[in-house]
Structures are given as C-alpha cells and as structure tokens.
Length: 324
Image 1 (cartoon, rainbow, N blue to C red):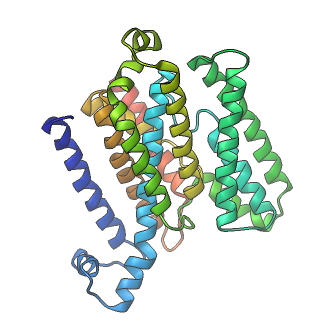
Image 2 (cartoon, rainbow, N blue to C red):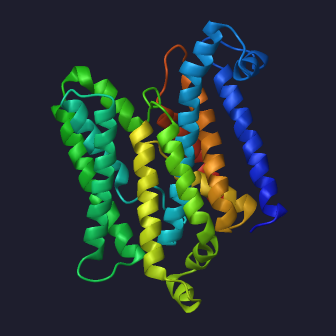
Image 3 (cartoon, rainbow, N blue to C red):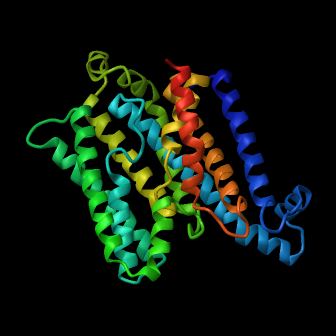
C-alpha cells in the first residue's frame, strides 16, 4: 500500500474539497457566512437557513463534486486504455448516445427520472455499439477502438441535429441547456457517489497493472498482466462512470481531459495515486465551475459546461505548452 508520500497529496485534496464545498454552499443570490454554514452543518441554525443550505444548495454542490470526480476518473482510465493522453470520457461517443436518449425522452414530453434513465440507456447502447463494431470478427486495438468511437460520435451528432431541428421552439432551451451541461436538475448525488466510490475501490488494487498497461500491451503481457480482460474491465468501468455523469448533468466537457493532465504534471504517473486524486480534483474543479456558473450573471445561471470549456481550453493549451 502506498505510504505517506501518497497520503499527503490526497489529504491536501480532501481539505481543498471541503473548502470548495463550503465556499459553494455559502455563495449565491443570498450570501451566507461561513460561520452560519458550519452552524447549520452542526445541527443548528434557523429553519430558513437549513432549507437554503441543506435542501437547496448542498445537493447541487455534492452533485457537482460527484460528476467532476466521475468524469476525471473516467478520463484517466480512458487515457490508460487508449495509451493516448488526449483521450477523454466522451471520445468514444458515449455522450452522444446519452444525448440522443435524453433528447428523445424530452421530445416525447417526459421529464425527471425518465430523461435520466433514457440518457443512461443511450450511453450504454453507445458503449455496446462502439465495442461491437471495433471488435468485429477478431480482436480490437486501441487505435481501432478510437477510430470507431470517433465515427460513431459523428453519427450521434447527426441524430442530435435532426432531433433539435424537429423540436418545437418551446422545448429547445431545456434541450440546449442539457447538451451544454446543466446541474440545476441533477437530483440526489448519492447514486453517482456510490458508483464513484465502488469503481475507485475496484481499480485501486489494479494500480500496478494499470501502470504497466500504460506503457503498452506487449510489455504488460510480458510482465504477466492479463491484458485483454483488464482492457475490457477498464472500458466497462469508464463507460459506466461516463454514463452516470452524463445522466446527472448532461455533457460537461474538459474535466476528464484537463484534470488527469494537471495531476500527472504535479504527482507523476502512478495510477494508484492518480485515480483517487482525479476523483477529488475533478470534484473540486466542477464545484468551483458550477459556483461561477450560478453567480456570474446572477440571478440568471449559465450552463456549467460553458464555464468548464472557458477554463479548460486555455488550461489545456498551457499544459501542452509546458510539456513540449
């Protein structure tokens, strides 16, 4: 088990995460002081403060933290699977499948759980479709899987455009917000948090095997790693993480691409440290992005995907410049 050199950055990220949650819960159209928030967390405070903090703000903040963690861990796993540092959770068309499922449900006039369930079903359908086409009659390679995912994603994009062109004007704003990433209707964070914790507990014991696999399948096989079952497991877990995140918040970009890059520059490339650090750092990033989305043009709200794109593009370009 990793020693104190691994625990130190994780403890620091936990403390930063707690601070980010505290700031996000405090800031809003009605500002609440830190002392009042802590008093409410301790069981005190007025009924109005408890409703505002515990019932309205905290579920959304925790949902943002969970979605960010899901996307960052999925991005780290995809980059190991494809041996490509530019891979992200959406590279294989999973968000496109989820978007088609969710938009069809919205077009039918449904809402809430049915939209979320349709998004999850669409993402899993995209997973099976990409894997089936990439596998074909033989085995698949990372490059074949990546190319298949890009082509399937283009097909989903065409279907999304078709659905939007057929949608009545009154329903378009909700659909567009969903496509840009929106946490205002994310619901309870606990199912997503359970998925994130279970996946992290499952992959952490595989950290050494993931480190070897990241160097290439031939080296991994030579060192005794069961390459094909491990690749299938990574693909399945990354798909479930992405599908869960898209179900909760729509398509939120750049989190799964930028966070693993940033952490590798700071912490190295040991997956035993990178994966739990991604779960925490991704959550922190999306909590802060959602806080900006809620307050930049308050009382109106921006889609959180707009903020992550505005933050992610220059950050990623800077990281590429540094790592030349």
